[in-house]
Length: 96
Image 1 (tube, rainbow, N blue to C red):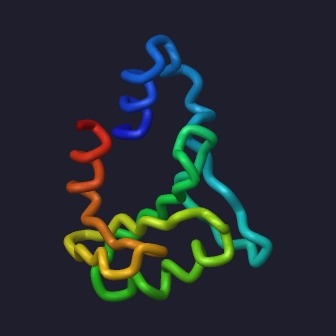
Image 2: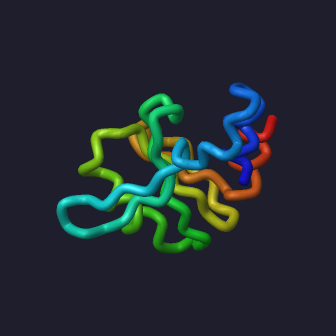
Image 3: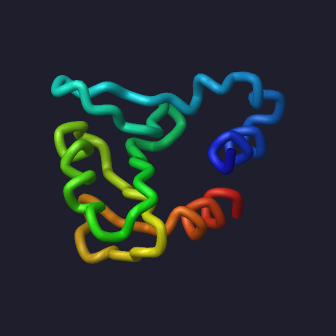
């Protein structure tokens, strides 16, 4: 919902164009939760966990996009290629 609200704020009247928030299937049949033309090359994988987010980030590795894993509470910005950000914080930043 935060992503859709963000697109609506930037492009009034676009709320019904929910195709701006898409999912993507990789060649290995893994799903990436949130991608889209308006994401600026970022893919977001929603994993409401703290302990296995690095394994889940592997799905994103082959995508070619910059990667964010939305976690329960883990915050890890050490690797610019894949960041773990708590889902609540990510939604707050997107809703801005």
